[in-house]
Length: 269
Image 1 (tube, one colour):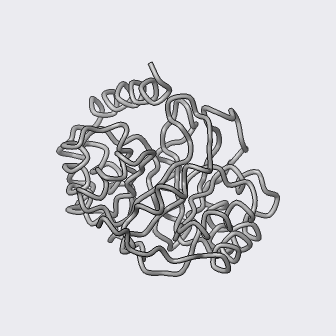
Image 2 (spheres, rainbow, N blue to C red):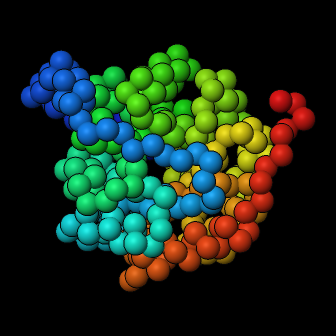
């Protein structure tokens, strides 16, 4: 099994336990009663989606985060465009309680960062106040991807559609994704190659909002991604390990805005 396969297996098992405790009908009702969605502005200047992330499969423990809401508040003070919250428990030590805490602490859009493989999770995300959800092309069939992209939209949420290859990017474009992530981490072995970003960015539609994921350790990395066409950077480890996360978000945002190079339409599209 690949790392992704193993994670999805765990996610599915944990989901089954939650479903036994709270049926889908109850989660749907909770989603319908949730506070209004906070729209993610797809046309804004370069920005940072700052992540609440305690650990990762590749790096182990990253930071002790006793109060995710406090960290999210620091991100917001630094000018973050949105807050990403890991809710997967086995490999990332995240939870839906973290999502609740962040949603209550800030007025920014909040992304539920998890491995979304079932309808239940989308209603669950909305019930806990998520405004965006992650769809990983590598974890879903094309039919599932389209179904879940449409489901997220029907619930008012924006889907960040994550790709890793030209074929996956084509699939994201085919379903009409407007927020497309290019993750430079290989989900089979967790290696990172930031050089994978530029060739895919060159193929992305100019009208899509492109998110660079993984491989950010400094403002210089942000500059590289922005020059290659990124509109947004999703950053976790570098921020949770920084002693001044607000200042780090501000510096990353400024670096991206100074270096950002708008993409031009690809000749084949």
